[in-house]
Image (cartoon, rainbow, N blue to C red; front, side, top):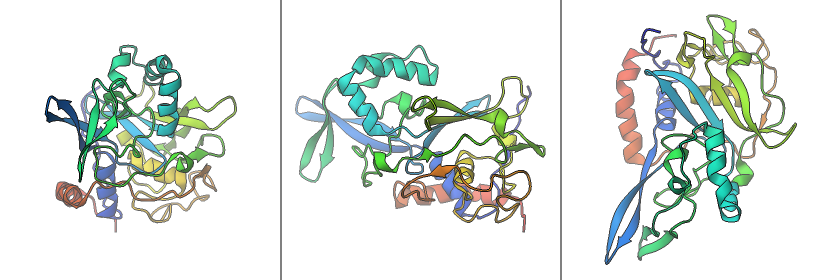
Length: 300
């Protein structure tokens, strides 16, 4: 398959839509510390900055977006599991991510880890304890929510387990994803892990069929905009990536394209804005978004 450039972000809702997209696809970088004698050595850690209750990881092949995995699994559940059955955690990681090479030692802290506070260095995680900010749950994948793991970050903790997204109906089979005018929702979107038989999904995956010669970036959302992970999430909730009402520039929900009439999602306290790590990073993202704004098509 020849290499193709992914479509640019639409100018609709600019600059809000593009800024939110860039922010949600950029990992926040924080810093913890390990003690070496009398010195404290920096330990960089990453965290996703996405919507409360839902986080995702994008997988690209040859520069093309082929899959996005959304997780709604609470951090607290995994921390408790690691304390009760540590041997189970690595096996679940391998199964969920389809990566048999994951080693148990990659999921725990190798030494005592400290957080630097106003009164000096304070213990954050003991050696051998579960590391919710491990690479397989940040840079290389999304197994569970890590937004509320505040250690190493200046921002306040994110909402806890009570605010995670829950699907109250079946996974939509139509009306969300379109390729060349054809509804491909059923081909692309599926539940990849459930809470139990007949229970709500813990994970959703949007993935291009193996035999397809197109990428997720070639798809359109119900409002006619190009696919982005944040855009699909907002479409599932009944809104657009810029935080406005769904279908504001395209078919209204329940009209045309077979769009579902009511959102199958329910969540307490869902917000439209992803976590932003601070003014400096927000300003840097705006500067980065500048060239995209210039390239964005005028759909007025």
